[in-house]
Image (cartoon, rainbow, N blue to C red; front, side):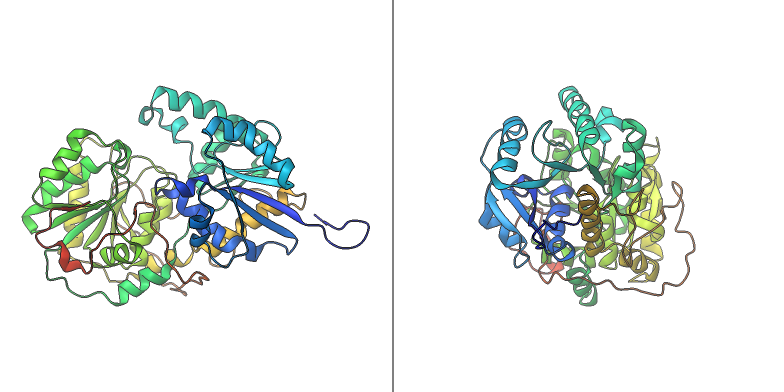
Length: 441
């Protein structure tokens, strides 16, 4: 990409970004986009202008202040009209040379396409989705992956699934992994104090069947004799009524639907451990956040979760017939003999997953889409990025790892953002507020 016209001055290249996800529910794709927009302009050539589109540009701009992103209002059109009509119009009207979307891109027009596909669980785990969702995603995501100049995804697990299912050239599918902002989590870790309330296990995620809250409650049944509670952070997102009723009725369970990021960091740091039994994930941001806060993790051994968790986590198969017993054994091990806090192996893993590296990977993809290819294949991680998968086999304890040479990361973002499962602010301060509190919604 030279970008130099005959007159000698570099012409402006506009990268449009579909940021409608910022107006919706808190989830991993929203977190990914917020963190990338905060950093991407600093990694792009000076002649590349980022133009992001949101239904509420003022609120969206507050999530990524001082970055040079230009915000435009996105009409409140239904998704089919936005994809089919608005993006081709905006590309012509606003001079967009590239358009970055998530999962689905326009079938025609809209400039050159970069599409971010966080996962293809609707292909690999179709039983988790309704028939209409499966049909729609298989048709539209497949077409988008094949049309895009560059496809970005967040894990090696998802990249392998994309290549296997859609058979696109591997050089077009690049990694831009999720990361973590360690500053607020490390602050909470250093300020960790003994709680005056009961010890608790923490569950973070939207309440939907895939996240496996029911299994977390089963584990609680098996370890409650140790005096622990289960604190659940996240809003209902089509969870089964039976599981929601169990959560509400269990005297040892606390449900916090809305949690401010600083409060969530405190909850991570004060927890005995994070319990993350999800059946399927394209990544698993809470696993990384908990480790940044110095908290042990017991997690699913399936899909991309071990990639997110690395060698310090303990893993079990959430689909095994005796899954609750397996998870309970690992929880009991940590309660009986807590690992170091923070665990240097965990901090080394965290240091390999910073959002600056994610922004660098997106910048490389932009250059490739504009005709200046980066390294072929998965994409080259920036300094401090993970280059291998670390997840141990199902049900195993952490395998040995060398003493890390670095236990910190660089971050240019002073203001924490909501975690993927947080949904606003709650008037809660300090771990002691859990004492005697059934729920706060």
